[in-house]
Image (cartoon, rainbow, N blue to C red; front, side):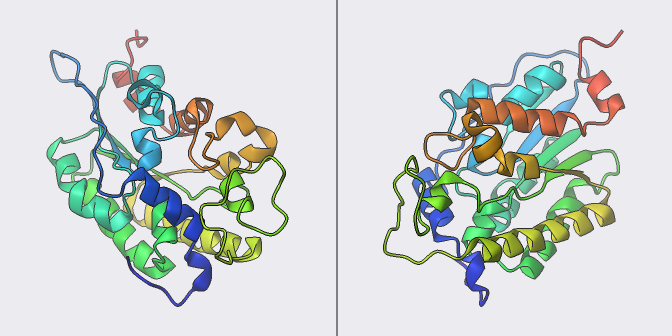
Length: 259
């Protein structure tokens, strides 16, 4: 685990959950359906959220599976999401496989575990630049990259702060002083600035997940019982956010609804 002089980035509560998800654990594989011709290839790169942790049935309810069924039904999906993965680990463990698959579209959601691991915004920027540059090198791959949602509103974070809500889950580290919400928001904002800048340089498309961060107050059903991961309903909302950013030509090529 990398360390940082920026104390707010050491989000112990998220680190605890990432650890429970099993960093370096088993990858949830997406069975590849039989196809003919030259199908659109969709690759999902990410961590526990991408693998479907928090849903009742990751094989069908993880948000990339929902996105696949609803927006890219004639594509071939490879979900490479690995619980606990940081951006650096995804570069090491997922990137080469993703490139080898010659994808037409790639989704990337990697940021919360990096915050938890104390990765500085500058290091994150450099690593994201490498990842997105590699994914867009052939000039024909559409890459959608997600921003960091609000962490300070999540039930598991609030459970570890003073005067937690009565319905909050159990704090996984009650003896640790967690950073104040303003510090957490500043860390998230620095990551999101990096994401927007790198996306602009590499031609990737930004998917804004800030609305998901407001879910505890606006859509509590989007949050799993662990107070952190997306539920099945949350996965649908995230899939919809990504779907709105898929270029029309890619969606048409991967949809049987196309005339």
